[in-house]
Length: 257
Image (tube, rainbow, N blue to C red; front, side):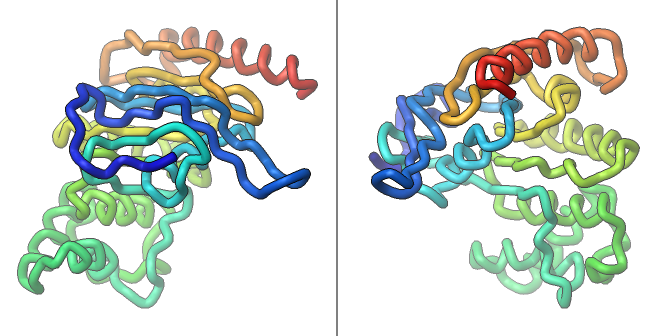
C-alpha cells in the first residue's frame, strides 16, 4: 500500500512486488495494473512494451512517487528518481540553460554552480553553445536533449522515460538513441523506458518486458543479448523485435484487438 522511500537492502534498483492500481470506485473503477512484480537491477536498461492503456505510464508514475499503489509495494531503495515525458515540457519563456537550472535550483545549488553545471550538461547532450536559446528556437530533437539534460541535472540514479522520442522523425530518433546509449553508459543509469515501438525497445534495452492488455500484468520478458552499439535496422534487432511483436499480437488477439 505504500511507496518505499527509505534505503533498503536489495540488489534491485527498482522493485515492484504484487503491485495493483485501481482508479475510481464502485462500478466506475478501472484496474490499470494487476499484481505486477518486477525487479530492475542497477544499471539495467529495461523497456516496457504493451498495448495502449495497459498501464505502462501508470507504472512509471508509481515508481516516481506521483501515484500510490492500491496494493503491493514499490521501492527505488532510496535512490533519486527522475522522470522524462514524451513532450519536453520546457518553460517557453526560459532559455535552455535556465530550464536546466530549475532542476539544480530545486536541489539548492547556488547560482554559480547552477550555471557551470547547466553548461556541462548542455555539452554532454551535444548542445554546447545553445544555452541562450529559447525552446521555440530549437528543433524537436534539441528540445528533447534539453529535457534529458534537465532530468540528468537531478543527479538521478533511476531515469524513467515515458515515450520520450515518440513524436520525433526516424532520423532524429536514431541520433537520440545513440546519445542516450552514450549518456547511460557513462553514468551507469538504471532506466525504465516506455515505448510502443518494438524495434526501439530492442535497440535500446537490456531487457524487454511485455505487459498484458488492461489490466496490465507482466506476461513475458525478453533478454536482449545483442552487442552494442546496435542499429535499429540490423538483422539481430529485427529478428528479436519480430519475436516480441508476435507475443504482442497474441495478447491483442486474445483480447479481441
